[in-house]
Amino acid sequence: MDVVAAYRHCEEITWAQARNFSYGIRLLPPDKRRALAAVYAFARRIDDIGDGTLPPADKLTALAGARASITALAGGGTPGSDQVLVALADAGRRFPIPLEAFGELIDGCEADVRGTSYQTFDDLRNYCRCVAGSIGRLSLGVFGTRDLATAAPLADALGVALQITNILRDIREDFREGRVYLPAEDFTRFGTALRPNGSGWPAADPKLADLVLFEAQRARDWYSRGLGLMPMLDRRSAACTGAMAGIYFRLLENIAAAPELVLQRRVSLSSGQKAMVAVRSLAGTALRPGRPGRPGPPRSTTTAGAPR
Picture 1 (tube, rainbow, N blue to C red):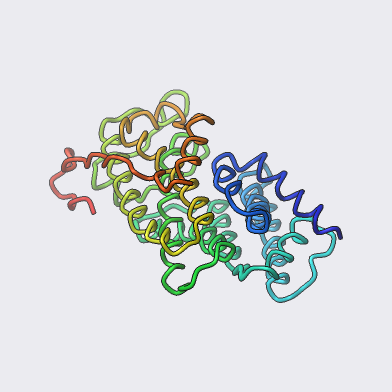
Picture 2 (cartoon, rainbow, N blue to C red):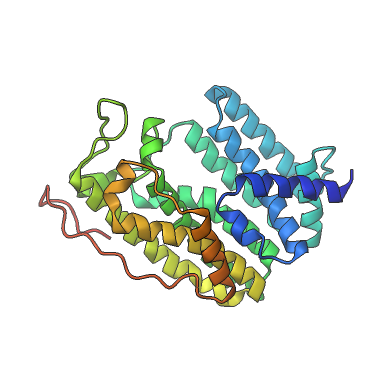
């Protein structure tokens, strides 16, 4: 199969569907840009299965098929006529991409299909490592680094930060779909819960805003840890990472500034704002925000532990 056409197909998927990541991916040199587009295209396929309209049993079957195809490819198998796999196979020959990390992304999507909830932050962190840390490690294979043993955990940490941001942004829509990602222990700590209003959306509660602010600070701490990766990357790879992380960090700052809004509407950035973050990332200035506030002690109970 025509590898050039396969890469073009992956880039078309990326530019059409990677509403945040595409701003960073475009900053890479052509060979890395094509390889990361191939990584994104297969990750998008997995996500689309998990978020699609198939019955749960059929989703699990489809995810098993995706797992089998990537396991075969990672083991040196041929991609057949699947354009995304053709591009991914070529990218894997050119760069040390840990294709087996896609298996962790599939693990996370399977947890979504099964409706898994999370009792502790450790539970949630493991989920975040699966669905987002895996992408960080896959991307690091494209970027390259001289010290993979040090860089990989940092890429993983940045993925955790991005996923917590995603969870906060989507808390309203996820609840309507029957998904609650924030840890049960944190709801208990703040003496609150997600409850439906008359329309099926989560009901407003000031304590929920405190919880969101707490989780935003937690995400910020993970950004601080993960951004230690930046000096370990070449300039264009660092710019790509800075653009992607900067867009999500700017989104997190908006959530922290008005945490009650995530229960009212989807908080987002405009295309112009995203483009500005991408431009600033080339100068290394995409991540210079103020520090969001930290919530006070939970007001509803004296037995809850201090927020971590």
